[in-house]
Amino acid sequence: MSYKDKIDPERLPRHVAVIMDGNGRWAKAHGLDRSEGHVEGVNTVRKITEIASEIGVGYLTLYTFSTENWNRPQAEVNALMNLVVVAIERETADLIKNNVRLTMIGDFSRMPEFAYTRLCKCMDDTSHCTGLTLVLAISYSSRWEITDAARRIAMAVERGEMRSDEIVPETVASNLATADMPDPDLLIRTGGDHRVSNFLLWQIAYSEIIVVPTFWPDFSKEDFCKAVVDFQSRERRFGKTSEQVGESAKP
Image 1 (spheres, one colour):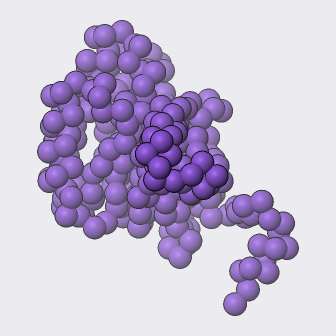
Image 2 (tube, helix red, strand yellow):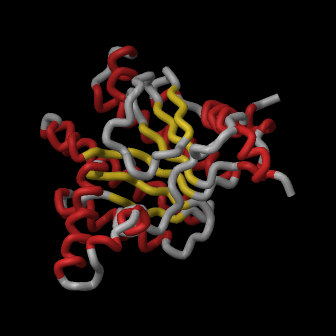
């Protein structure tokens, strides 16, 4: 029996976030240039988007390009930006066919104008879709996001729109880039490293985390389904005891 067949459709994670790590190491292991790893990684994005949509996940957020990635060699940065844009443009027709809506989160002021403009066109083209929402975290870092939220909250206090003692966790959440999305239920990291790399730090406070050694280009649909099955086997307590969770689950 495949892992897809083991998935309980009534207990799906609403939101899955993925740190797509290992493109460069995959290329090195195959005697290829790092850029070839990124190209192969794009193929994996297509496969994982397809399976997430197929099983009924609501949101899939992919850590596509971090603000720290701007510090990489300029040639690699340029190649990555161009690759992302070309890949998304190429896949837009299939996204529409599969009822997938595209959106982005990140510091767009740092993006090249050509990349931002063309990706916005893809978002507009898929805006009517009502199935899976595919979120590209591009030019993104959680510290940037939280800092930006704090700045906007401070400005609201300065304008007299709220008092400082009225600031609650919901205030912060409503000022994040993900304000209109549920927090991730499941965070998957490929490539084997056990860190979250400045990704959705606020939002993953109670996410289940799964780290796999598989490099992103080799991460398969079956691997994704296996992670979902693993997620469904876990007891999510949110700070409560097992007994409390059991009581709240009773009809």
